[in-house]
Structure formats: C-alpha cells, structure tokens
Amino acid sequence: MVAPDLVSEEDIAKLIIPDDLPNDEPSFKAYIEAKVYDKDGHLIQHHRQPMRSLTQYFLALMSIPLIGTFQSSSTNYATGILTNVLGLPSQASNNSDCAGIKWDFSIQLGSGSQEFSLTLSSLAAPIANGTGPGQLTYLSKASSYTGTSISLFITVQNVSGSTINVTEIGTFWNVQVLCGSCATTYNYNFLFSYDTFSTPVSIPNEGLATFQVTLEFSG
Amino acid sequence: MMVGKDIGEPLTKMPKDVYYNGKDVPTFNAYLTIIVRDKDRKVIRVHRQRSHSPTYNFIYLLLPFSFYSTSGAKVTITNTSGGSTSWAPSPSYITYPNTQTNNPSYIIMIQVGNGSQSNPSAATKLAAPIPSGTGSGQLVYGAVSVSSNIAVSGNSAYFYIVQAFSNESGANVSITEIGIITQIQVNGVYCGNTVNFGSLLVWYDVLSSAITVPNQGTVTIYYTFTVNP
Image 1 (cartoon, rainbow over the protein chains, first blue to last red):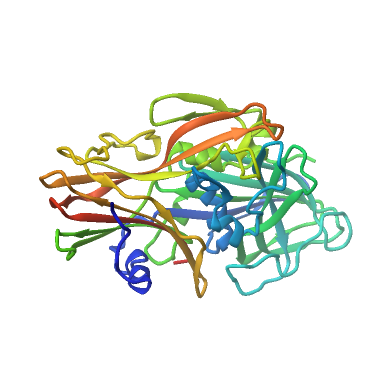
Image 2 (cartoon, rainbow over the protein chains, first blue to last red; image 1 turned 90 degrees about the horizontal axis):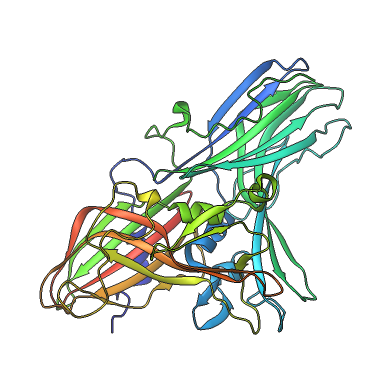
C-alpha cells in the first residue's frame, strides 16, 4: 500500500509551483487578435496581443476532460472542483434518467476596464447587442482547433451611427447540466478570461470587426 | 457590405509577434513534480519540469458545443487499447452524476512508463507502460488523488493531481514518460446512446531526464495546473 507523500501542505505548495525552472518554452500560449474593416471592407486596424488573464473557472472547466466529472468509479458525486468552484450540483436531481454536461462559449466586448481577479464575473462596461448608440451588433461566432490549440471568434458590426471604442474583451462559457426528467435546469455562465486591450480597438460606423481568442498548448 | 476575404478564415498558427519572449508571463502553466524517496523514506531526488501536452483526446473533449453543432463535425476518440469512437456531443454528453444511474467519468490514474514518443499530443497510450505489481520492472501503484478545490494565492490559482508508487520489484526501476488516464463515458439524458470510451490518455509528458526509483523506494508524482502563475 502506498500513501501519498508525507510532506506538509506548505511544502507541497512550494514544490509543485516552482518559480526556479529554466526559462524554457512555456506550457501554454494565448493571444487575442482584432481585425477592423471599414464600410467598404478595407482592413483598417489589425491588433494582436498576448492574452494574460484566465480566471479560476478556466481551470475548473479544463478539469472535466482531465479528471472527469465523478469523484471516482464507485461514487456518483461530482468532483470537488466542479461543486466548489463552479457551484455545480453534486448530483443532478434525477432518479430515473441519465445526466450529462455540455458547454459553449461566447465573447463579449466592453468599453471599460477593471482590475483582474480570479473570480471576475463580468466586464466593466459591456457593449450591448443592438443598433443603438454605443451598441454593436454581435453577428456570428465560430470556433476551430488544431491538435494543440482552440480558437474562438466573434464578428461584430457597428451600425450605431458613430465610432465605438472597444477596450476590454471577455470569454464566457455557458455550462449546462442536463438530465431527462429533471425538474431543475442547471445553467451557469462563467467568465473564462478577461483582458483589456493595450490600445483601444476603434470600429467606425458601418464598420465590421472580428475578434479572435486562441489558446495554444505547446505540445 | 463588402468585406475582406480573410474574415472568417481562422488563423490557427501562433503569430510570431506573440510568441513567448521570456518577459511575458504565460497565463497558464502545468508542472510535473516528482519526489523520489529511498527505502528509509529519505528524499533522494526532486525533479521538476514544465508539463506540455494535452492529447488530441483532451482537445476534442474540451471543444465548445457550437463547434460540433455548427460544423456537423465528429471527432475520433481513441482509448489506450486502440479502440476508437466517432463522437459529437449530441445526443451523448459527458456523463454527470445523478442519484441512481451511474456511468462514471473519472480519473483512473497517473500512469508511468519507460518509453517515449516524439509527438506527445498525438499519443493515445504510453509507449511502454510500467505495470502495477511487484514483478521485475514493475511498480505498485497507489491511489490517485485530486485536490478537492482550487487553491488561490493572489491572482494565481492551481489544483493538482497526485499519485504515489512503490518499488517492490527487487531492483531499480526507471521512469521516462508519464500520462494521465481518465475514463470518459457519454450518454443521452434519457439514458440512450450510452458509450464508454474506455481509458483515455488525456495528458502526456516525456521526462527531461529519467527518474530512477530504487528498490524499496517510492516515488510521488504531482501534476499541477495553474493560471496566472
């Protein structure tokens, strides 16, 4: 019988998050890209910057394909990370059918800024979907992947009548726990990443812009 | 409105100008920490390195629902036995615990091996897994454990997976590769379309240097996943 290590929790924390590793290739890279087109379809701004601010909800979501949803093979309770961090139920309230989990993303743009925190849940000043003053029309979203990366896209159009400056961007994930005859619908939204642009992205009236968030593991 | 033709064309290669330059702090990191003890439980080696490689299985399972629903695409999930399943997350979602039905999706183990493979992302199994046991070249696998919460320190957060192994083989055993093995099942919400993908390699690393576990010694392996380290 083998027990996990005997060192203290404090010792473990010092060991497992090393700050003295060689400055080699990181495990992960991420970037944000924005392309702005005028009303004639000409590319007028191309902005790209590293992405820096993942929330703790990113870790919780990535735990699902990594460690599954159940605590073990012999218990039908959800992992502590899902219940403690995402607030998901330990069991779907269903005694006859099966339960499953799915998730999807959305990208929101904003015109404010705020200090990052791991539990951030919204943008400082979200730009609403619409055609009114200060609003953008959120068009299609898309996603793609390679073997080691995932890219998320949103296209927006400005028909508000004046230029709109985008200064912040957030990626949201909607997580749903589904079951056949559940009386309760489990539906959660989490801010997965939050970044402010190093320079504002200006979308002229009648212009169009695509925003891309790419997460790449180094493989 | 006329738009440039590059709209909607995904840029799937990392642009050079956002490559890691040694100054920017990456927003996510994964680490391997390996602690080797001798027969007297004395620490004789601590090995630490960055962990790099989610496998294709992991990426497929992480993709958002709309990727599948808008493209109609299916992916091929391949288990450690070589069995494969073509899948999209409708009508069969990754199982979630409920009060009766139990098609569990759960972590099985950190698996260790003494082989290597050059394309870790494409790996579906370890090159040369070390079996659990007391025979020659074997290690006794302890139970895998996952932190029950995400630990937070300032703007940094992490969780870890840990497993211990003992060497009762009678001779040194070397470890050169490590992976995370998870069983994933999917089902429809009315219990139809249940599929057990089996044991999936979802994360894989080749060690930067071999780890030798002495006879009667132990090795404890931590995988740590962190944001904003």
